[in-house]
Amino acid sequence: MIDLRRLRILRAVAHYGTVTAAARALHFTPSAASQQIRQLGRELDVTLLEPQGRGVRLTPAARTLLAHADAIEARWELAETDLRGRTDEPAGSLRAAAFPVALSRLLAPMAKALHTAHPRLAVSLTEADPTECLNLLFQGAVDLAVIEAAPSIPPVTDRRFDQVPLLDDVLDLLVPDDHPLAARATVPLAEAAEEPWVLPVPGTTCHAHAMSACGAAGFSPHGAHQVLDWGAIASVVAQGLGVALVPRLAEFSPGLPVTRVRLEGTPAPARKLLTCTREGGRARPAVAAAVAELERIAPAVVA
Image 1 (cartoon, helix red, strand yellow):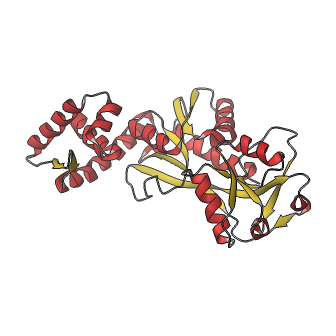
Image 2 (cartoon, helix red, strand yellow):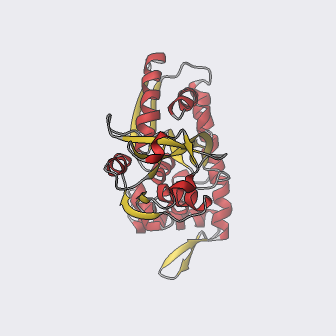
Image 3 (cartoon, helix red, strand yellow):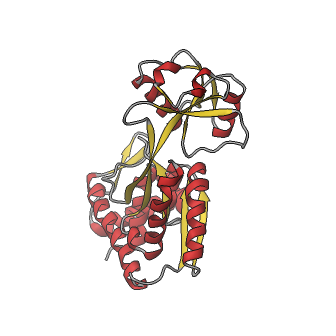
């Protein structure tokens, strides 16, 4: 009989990339985590870790075992749902996570609606970037996350997670109210090619989206300013220091003298948001109710 606790340590090594990181996440010492994996290998009469430089890597046998381990975890999620009753009224707890803008514009109204519709369901929200959202899902610390599609997240074929498109968060051109483009209903992005730009900080997915959209329009933006927070970006634009690309979900201080101008072209540049659960977790009544509410809310917040 396989010790499922040891199997989860092996899954954590694959998820976090190193024994040390996995041990830290699971509150083990690295030596204890390694010992548990070695013991699992002895039980199965295979080698699961092999030396690689100063560290270790998973063997082909470990990769084969992990495919089954992911399936076991998914079946366990479904088993828990069956035990609770698939048709029961959503009740108990629902833990959801998202990055800041998605939490304020999507998860917060979702939680309010669920509280009204299902008073026996307690919803708790956690702010986290997409990578940390996936870590929280993997650890079982949250049940549902709203993340942004990016090269850093696992592919949709990853059997540990169930990722489903939620909305396209379209990007608009943000200009000062007195800018010549502010009076236009729509503009080609290329018309802003010679403007100074307020760009998100390099290395972020928001920066990648801006550079990709400008590249598709035929120019490389002159990044006069690099700012992380959407509200701060809008404040810099309001001072006439540049223009920016901002997602529809982003909100700014009331009365800020800035104008959103929609971009011409189909499809418009956008970042794609997903709902994400552990494989098998979407069948839980509470998760299903939350996803349904998010799908109801989403179109209105980016209209």
